[in-house]
Length: 355
Image (cartoon, rainbow, N blue to C red; front, side, top):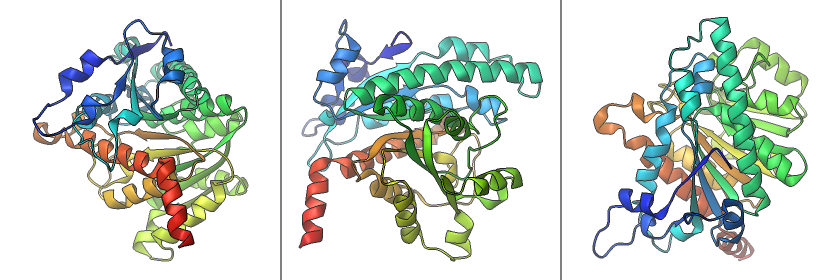
C-alpha cells in the first residue's frame, strides 16, 4: 500500500456541498482514519464497496490515444460526494480508499513521444509498474471480502483488476467488457489496448466476453485470434445489435451472462463506447447512456460480480462548462452498481420472481 494516497474525512468535507434539509453521500461515506492500518481498516469497516482511483493516462498514450483520462478521478469524487443519501442508495456502504500515487510516472511521460520506439518501451514499462500496484491493492480489497469499484485511468488497468481479483480468489476469473474495442491486441508491450490479452496469456483471465464491439475498429488479426479460442473468448458487435437488428440488446445481455456466470467476473466499462463522451477514443456512434446503465444493473445484480471498473472518461477533453458531466455519469454508474448488487435487492428480486 506504499503507493496509495488515502482519502481522509477532511478531504471529503472540502468537496461536499452541505445544504439544510438534505443528506449527501459526502456526509455518510466512510474514509480511512489518519494513522490507521489500511489493510486492517478495509477488513473491519462496515462498507461493502471500496472506491479506488487511478489518475493516469500512460497506457492510453502508449496505445496512441489522446491523454486526459487522468482527470476522471477528481471529477468523480466531486460528483459522488454530492449524490443524495436516501432509501434508494446509501453512502455508508462505500469506503473511499483513495488513489494510486502515479505522480512520478505521469511526470516521466510528459516529454515522451509514442511515435518513437524507445519512448513506447518506456511507456510500456511504466504501465507494467502500475499493473503491479493495482493488482496488489485490488487483491487486498477482494481478500477482505469487499468489492472494488475502480475509476481510471486508462483501460490498461483491466490487467491489474483481473490479476488482483484472481490472486485473491486463488483461480482465474471471467470478465465482461462493455467496449467499442476488444482490448485484445497482440502482446507488443503493455498499453490500454491489450490488458485482456495479457491477462489471458498470464493465466488470470478464464472467460472473456466483449459486449458491443465496433466492427469498423476491430482488426482482422484480432478477430482471427478470438476465433481460435472461441470456447473462452466471445463477443457481439454494436452493429449487429443496433444497426442491422440481427440481435437484440436484452437477449445479448442474457447470452453474455450465460457465458461468464459460473465463476466470479469483473465488470469492465469503457466510456469510449458511448457517443460524444470525452475519452481517448471518442465515438459518434454507440449505445446510449441508458443502455449502459441497464448493462451495469444486469451484471451487477449477480453475486459473482467481483468488481466494477470504469475507465477512459476524460473530463479534461470536455469544454470547461461541461467538464463535470463525466464525473456525474460515473456517479450514476457507481450507484447503479451498488443498487443492483445489494444482497437485499437480490432477495427482493427472487421473491418477485416466485410471486
